Image (tube, rainbow, N blue to C red; front, side):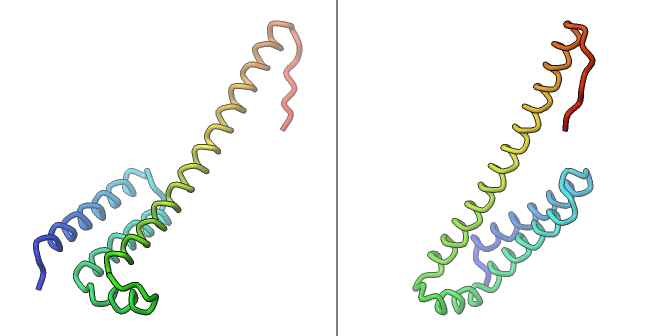
Length: 120
């Protein structure tokens, strides 16, 4: 029997799948990211509909309450997404620093009348 909270979770998951489709069509995410998000939200729907599957998994890891297992998976997901966001921002910052450095060197060389030497 599906209760109210399960219905809310299913509607939310379906909405997130729809948003993933929209972002994929707009080319804001690539095919691998799209497949990952659809897999995550589809598995969420399945877990909400069939919670007994998680209860058996929780018992194999000696976790007594199903909620504790969900919290552990949530922490793993949040930590991995935070790492990805950090690495992406660090890469973007490095690219911006390189662009600003190249622009500053170009302007300085043009003021001094020197030829620009691109070193990469």
